[in-house]
Length: 121
Ligand code: BTN
Image (cartoon, rainbow, N blue to C red; front, top):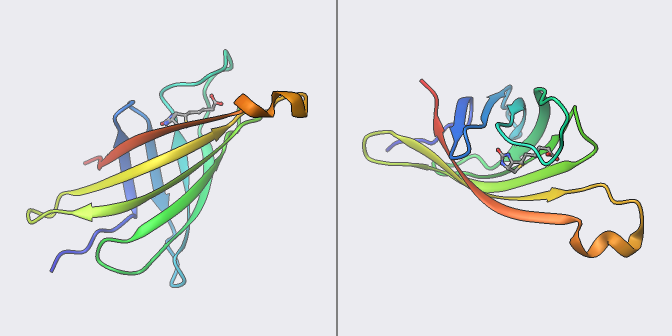
């Protein structure tokens, strides 16, 4: 049966690209994320990600992006699916945390959304 592998280059429905490398025996991995969009006026720069995944045919996973051009953080969680033809899809949800100056502004400091990733070939 087919196995969904997180290692490699991925693109999502927003046009963002990410590369996952170094998936270790215990399921920890690293990579880089190049977002197509931003909430800021800053120039977008490639940013590091770290995560973990289970070791099975359609693994669940999570990773954190520490944006290098911005004081915000995004966490993604999802599952890697593979179809009969071997096409892999990552179905994810994300939380994007803004940096607010006061605890009074905490109530609207987190955005939520979904992204679908497919393998870049
Ligand atoms: C920021 O603007 O604060 C940093 C970049 C955030 C990009 C977000 S993360 C969730 C969503 N999915 C993407 O690929 N990009 C946006």
